[in-house]
Image (cartoon, rainbow over all chains, first blue to last red; front, top):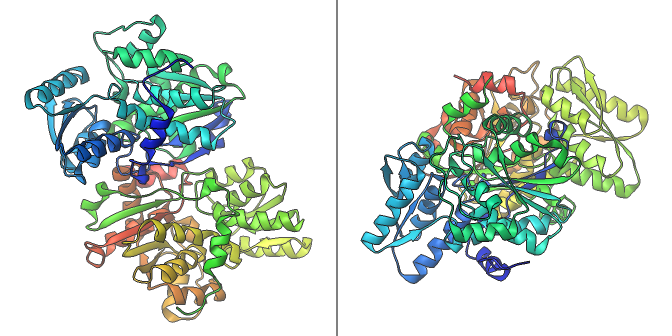
Length: 320
Length: 320
């Protein structure tokens, strides 16, 4: 395998710095989903923890290293899950966490960030404006900026999911990974390509937020002017070049799915698996729904990466 | 501690016979629930597995021992979760599983029992009639009857949850346990009383199905003529004397809760924890809601024991 910024030894070492509450998450086959999908569907569940997403695997690393270094202040931009995770990881380590988010972010995520004691700054714009604002705060105050997917800890944290997948499920044929900034996809993808090279790594992004997927296909950074998706967790417009480089090494494909498929995926996960998920966590099921033939009869893992939703919006999406 | 039918060494040995997919389930604090409850709420999540309940911990033992003995046929009565778990555990071991259930059982549970390849026989009556019918089948055909809570494997399987609780959470003050036949309560209760004797073991049953709770308070078997609760998983009428004897040793209290509290608990678990649960799994939260003062400021664990619901009934319960 060609090199990426990631390294298996470092990822294994990372596991030891993460609170075990975020590790060894459930991985199980959900046969009740299969009649509707035509393949063996395995769920890697990243929602049964104090922040209801996989993001704390990365923020545990960030916060541990930061606390060890004696630094106390940290800022990140977030659609909500990274911010909540950083707030959680920072709280017990005595860090001052600032999270910058869009004013239009999911209310439930913003409420949890505040409840965990972080300072929350809202911007009148989308996630890319929040990223710019967080960078400005970091530069102005001389404090640590956590850049999701660029900062290697965020990728290494996510990559620990990959270790658990290849350890527990040697018969893995396909891993479906939500694609946003790319930390989850490059992290898990690196491990799968290194340790289970026969498995296919497929990234899934909404058609309404296609920047990284287009970039992967064109093998150069492609930006978009706007996003239009309910999958708030993956709605970026400016792919990071170094992350794209890694993704080009580890991903076998990157596909786009329609909003209707994301909603159908959420509905299936609720009805047949009893799981409330946020839209980004239904991208894998959406990909199967849009291309059943591709997955027919194969052993598929989909990473259910988060469950932070506004319940009224959720009910609107999945209800009758 | 006074003796029960359970034994820590046997429970530790039991762990090794259970498919790891059912072990080491998530245990995490859910702070978002706490403003409404006034105590530290920790969730032990038994739903993220192929049968969506804790029951497979017991059926894995039953089926392993049965397969080792060369027997191939087994029957149980079930409100749905035991039957589903026995069907799952029996399938890969080549067992012929028969499940007897009430015609009024949760449809989703019955569907899964059939899908897992078990023979399903429905009776025109409640769970107690299903128990009688299963016993008759076993006697007539000379095959193994699995009696939930009476058969020690069902208690030992459930007890492995207790090992995980005391290992992971030494600061435990209270464990809230759904009380039906008593396997979960006596199993977990035994371990907690043996290994974390400072923690309080509180069993929770619906007011509409109070037989075991009344029996515990009167220290003798008390039966009821009927049940009236949405918590189908715990709606028995004839407590088993040997199980009551154990429960008298390990439980510090047994409390009854109203249907409205069960529904409020389900609603809180959905809205603040993102968890779809069946009514029996909300009994612990219901108990806190009905007696906040008792739990104020304490570290409570509630075992979320199952998530098999009919979605239309669920929506009716938790919706607006």
